[in-house]
Amino acid sequence: MLTFHGKSVFGGIAIGKIYVYQKDNRLIKREKITDPESEIARFQKARKEAVEQLGELYQSSLRKIGKSEAAIFEVHQMMLEDLDYVQSIENIIEGQKVNAEYAVATTADNYACMFASMDDAYMKERAADVKDVSERVINVLMGNKDSSPEMTEPVIIVAEDLAPSETVQLDKDKVLAFVTRLGSSNSHTAILARTMGIPALIGVDADFKKLHGKLGVVDGFKGVFYTEPEESVLQELEEKKRQEEEKKNLLLSLKGKANVTLDGREIKLYANIGNIKDLALVKQNDASGIGLFRSEFLYLEKDNYPSEEEQFQVYKTVAQSMAGKQVIIRTLDIGADKQADYFDIPQEENPAMGYRAIRICLDRPEIFKTQLRAIFRATVYGNLAIMYPMIISLDEVHQIQKLVAQVKDELKEQGIAYKDVEEGIMIETPAAVMMSGELAKEVDFFSIGTNDLTQYTLAIDRQNPKLDDLYDAKHPAVLKMIQMVVDNAHKAGIWVGICGELGADTDLTEEFLKMGIDELSVSPGKVLPVRKKIREINLDKK
Ligand code: PEP
Ligand code: MG
Image (cartoon, rainbow, N blue to C red; front, side, top):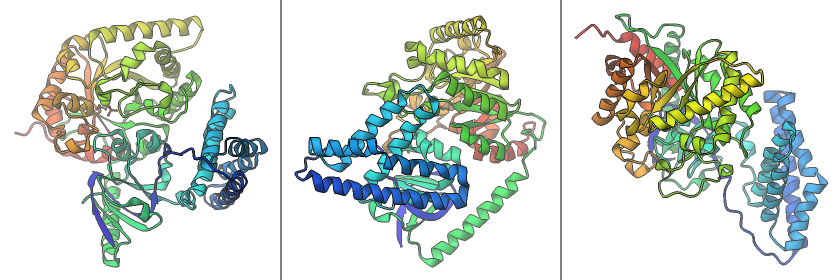
């Protein structure tokens, strides 16, 4: 048994096989070879093995998830048998006298670009498939023979680091826990783990490569990761896991109950999501609405800008599934740690203070207007609201208002239905706090983003693991700012919530209620614990 210590970003116990996650963007070197014939034979051998793996995957998926879902692995097999694809790889090996890994990666990129540029939505989707099957062949070529098949069962993902774009693409049903060497507790990857409600540790210093396939246990409460645990440790943690399940079940008895204090003060208790797949968690945990839909994850899952239609379908589905409950869609907050290659954002010295979020949207209105059109079209399918991130000035709000008016006019002209909905802003910069009196007169609500507000107030990069212990969202400066924002919001007659991670801190729930906070939006798994806390508070007392 080996024991490693790390920092917990989400509690819980996970027991399962370890899967060492290899980065998508690992460096595939272009190497000169002298014997193309044997390199082609090496490629063919790997290709055949990949086809066999897919056959096994098809069979096991057939049993677990059914024929229509398993069919994708048959399609993948066919792709690897496709003559044009195979010949393209062989031509590169032979013509350029280069290694098979490089030839496969180059062909995959070429095919993915070709598919992505097609108009047909089905063909566009194939771009991801061709990358996926090629990745499988490269895995085999590089000797990670059985890495993918293990993802067919739930695993503990172990990695150097995970970018939000990688995390969001993992199949949540197959992830028991995350363990990474790098990362910070306030990064979006950590937030995703909390949204998914799975145990996660960062700062775990282990030789990950040797752990692949072994049994692991993550104790997300204590921040400990065991590999090949001794029987006694395994039994102890299995018991702890069982007790946790019991606690969770107890919390479930709070489903359907109001978010009301003992003295009758009711507040909105919403959930944060990053993805349409999180809707199930919102329902399971009985949130009264969605207070933050991080729409940028829609962009991070793609190789190219999601079209208006694609976005519309997602917003419509979310609006419809929430059946009249409010859903606040935050417009694109890309940049800093959330990067998508196709945005071509140049390398920056200080990305957190850089070209991001509303700054990009106002600089590139064609991207922003596409999203606004999609959201407004979806407004007729439920109770939507919109909020804008990273605001620092009244001028930005005025620019947004102009663009929104243009979008509405265009929709009207085209005879497309939409509803006027609440529009709010995030208060996550000290500038917005100081201007909250003026800003409150321009919008329908405020949502305080304590994650960024903390980093900008304390001048502490939320991504920097070295500063993790100094990143204190409960700092008196942050709490004073929250009070200031609440007072200014209420003076102007608008409501105000918190959607940063601090909103879920049950040690502060009473203080937030006393401050006058009207809404808390938390990770789905935190809804019931916060509801429990609210229902125990008596604001009349003391
Ligand atoms: C925040 O900054 O508090 C917030 C909710 O936005 P994000 O964490 O996505 O930056
Ligand atoms: Mg933010």
